[in-house]
Length: 256
Image (tube, rainbow, N blue to C red; front, side):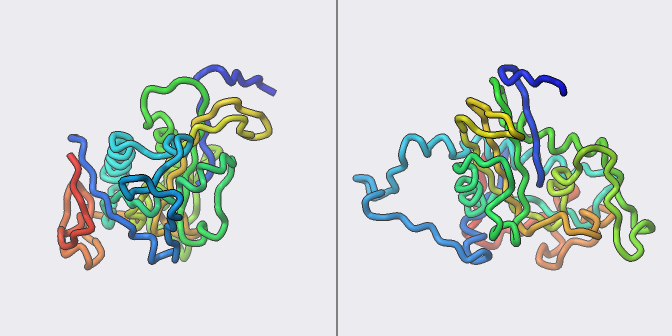
């Protein structure tokens, strides 16, 4: 068995333009029936939650949030074959909080099980120095090299999963057309068990997606002219080969 040097820049993945990003607040709270409860003892003098220092490491910075979201949308806009129904992806704070809660466990597996009925999830972990959060995200996209998209003629009646590498479902979740929201969290984990080995210090990234993708027997998107089969809720709005949300809610914010 090949010996892995845990002191080198090593990453592992596991299944599941200008800097700009849409975020949507609390969208998943009604979907999955969860609520964030803060006890009085957790409130600071300014009336805001008092976050322990150890927890602050789990929050994604705005720069990292924008990088993750823009990278997803860049990948989604440039899929081949082209997608007829690819939806622009938004950042979801509810998904980010659920990802934060799971990342805090430092468990190298998908979870929690009750949420995975509703959400998609991609995981990544690495040890050693890294320059960009995208070093933990790009390996998911790299699976495209081993993935053969199932054309409509191949789907009779169900679409095959044609993957010629160890894993392709991180990539397919990234480009699942209807998975239009993502939220991620990052955690520094000490003595984390990864595939039977103890990593003394690991950087653990969890990204949750909604609606859930990777349904067996389905293709990640429809092949066709970009935006030609967008859901009616988009009102025909299209941007950069993706069905683009109409600005009609004060729950959406633009960051630049």
